[in-house]
Length: 52
Image (cartoon, rainbow, N blue to C red; front, side, top):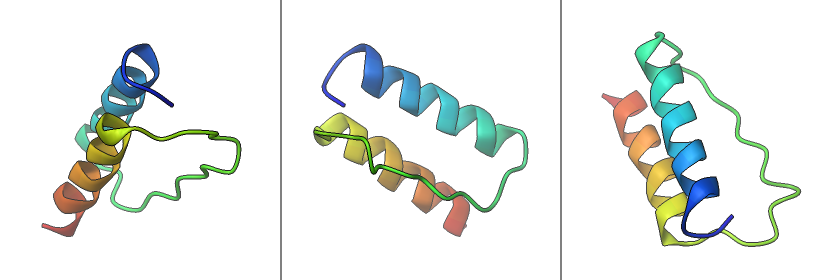
């Protein structure tokens, strides 16, 4: 997952889940060959949102 469409899609999808009230997520990154800083930021940001 690199900067651009993939990271944007991940971020949008995670935000939608949180907005729908999802409080527990399991993110399977087994098939991800790369994860850039935007992808990591999306995951960490979602974690912080769910921790509040």
